Structures are given as C-alpha cells and as structure tokens.
Length: 164
Image 1 (cartoon, rainbow, N blue to C red):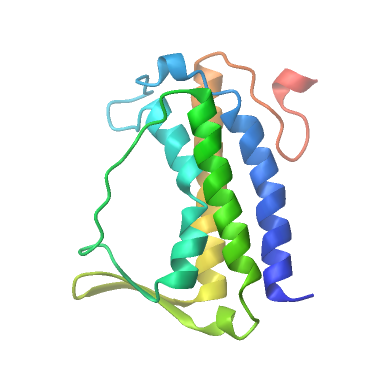
Image 2 (image 1 turned 60 degrees about the horizontal axis):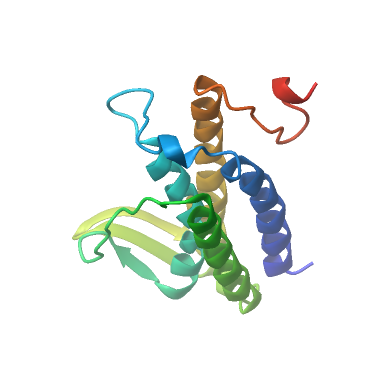
C-alpha cells in the first residue's frame, strides 16, 4: 500500500469520528470555557475543523515560518459553518495527499519562528503529528468540554458512557 493511501484511509476514519464530535457542539454556548486559560468552546471546535489544513500546509510549504504567516483565529457562527469548514479542509487535505509519491513523504518539513528552528521532520512524520495527532488531541479536549456542558459524548473507539 502506498503511504498516501494509508494516510488517506486514516484521515477519513479519524475525520468520521471527529465529525460526530463536532456535530454535538452547542454553538449557542460558543463563548463558554472551562478555565480562563482555555480556548472558548466555539474557538476550540473551529480549530479542530481547521486542523486538516496542516496536511496541505505540510505538503505545499516546505519551510513553514510562523514569523511570516499571518493567522487570524475565527470562530464558526453556526453548526453549518463549522461542518462546512471541516469538510472543506478535509477534502483539500485528501486531494493533496492523493498527489504525493512515497518519496515525497520522505522530504523534510521545517518549522521555524524566524531564525529559531522548531522542527525539521520528514513529511510523513509531520503529517502524523501536526495533523492527525493534533486533531485527535483536540477532539479529546472537546469531549471534556461537552461532558462539562452535559452534552452526550459520542463514542470514538467504542461506546461512551452516554451510549451504554
């Protein structure tokens, strides 16, 4: 199996689980946060919806410099917008992965802040960490937010306490 095919299959699988979580986000409470240092519910959910963009960035930007990238955090205003953001970034990521050869995944991806080097990894390692693991990490965080808001949490790798 080509590396791209494995990544596409994994991304589709994990995204189907992520979508179940995003569908439960009560955006009428988008400003809620469990702690003053935490992201708001709406910002966290939107961040998760945007995470697949890292696959595309890793594929297309060989030297990613946070010092030269402008980023303006957004928060989806509605459930439809949240799911649209997720589907668009996911579709783009899958299409970009489909263009890769096995050799492409071995090229390096550099992350820096100006002259400060943060990371220099093979793209296959960067995609796993900066995209897939990143999405799974924040999805777990979102599940805690949902639990604290008494929203039934969907199961991910088996039933949740709400699905017994």
